[in-house]
Image (cartoon, rainbow, N blue to C red; front, side, top):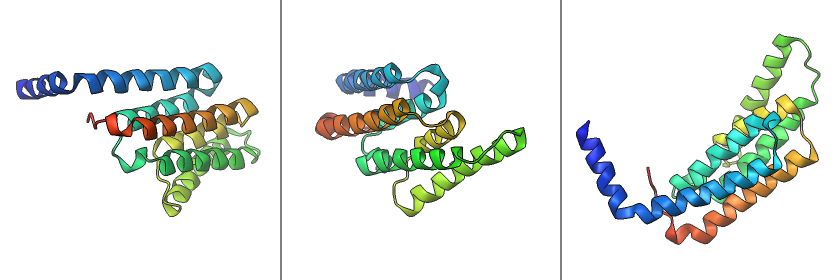
Length: 161
């Protein structure tokens, strides 16, 4: 157990600027997201927070690519919206509709090569709360900003995991 802390401490000493820069960038990105969405959209906020983690803590990951971040969340928005159109008033049918939105989003991301795990949360959040112009702007703006920051800072970002 002590070896883990020593290794982490050595990595931090060597790359502390990366840890700080990438954490600040993630903080700013999440601040922007939260500025546009309320706690009613907590699931969507959480999925975008998870996206910020992937983009800034694991920038070399396939799921951090703009294609995956943007494509995955667009798929999540679309599937969530599509399934929110299905009336679901009874508890069982709500659970079924929510589950289908996530399952279809995952299926669509896989077949379109836009896999981004947090985007399944976007599908869930949209199907639960519905889509509004505010949600659409917040999600699309956030994923574009996250992808742009990732692209601009890619030479300075290091995998921290």
